[in-house]
Image (cartoon, rainbow, N blue to C red; front, side, top):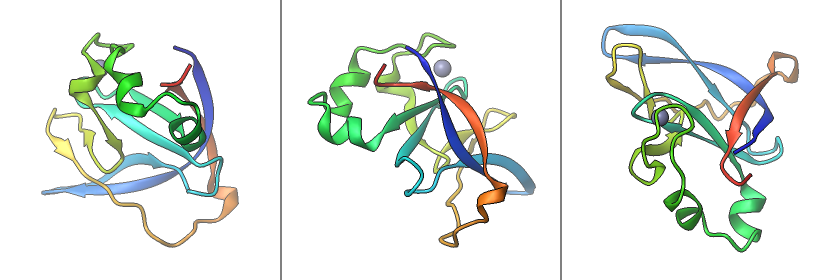
Amino acid sequence: MNRRTVKCFKGYAQSGVRFNIEVLYTLPDYYHTKLFTCLRCGALYCADQDDIDCSGRPFDAVIADLECQECQSPLSATLAPYPESFRMADETMGHFTPSPLIPDDQDSFSVDFWNLYT
Ligand SMILES: [Zn+2]
């Protein structure tokens, strides 16, 4: 699996008594890249919507054969859409829904993720 650089924005999730838990998210118009996480170890992954729709390799079939690059879990059991779900430092599960407001482009930055389709 290869790494891929994705343009992201930073969000701040809240869970129970915890605030300002930093998460990343993408916008639908930036390369249309979706993010995923391994709920067992927190490793982050990405997949192009174009690959999901047009590569001829259905998403479920792609992840059926993959292990997490960082904890070797079968991704079919541990992968979840991110940051809708994510693993927090205390090992509980956090959730975050990005604001529908489009943030300033100058607030974006680049992060490398494992690309599920490579
Ligand atoms: Zn993992």
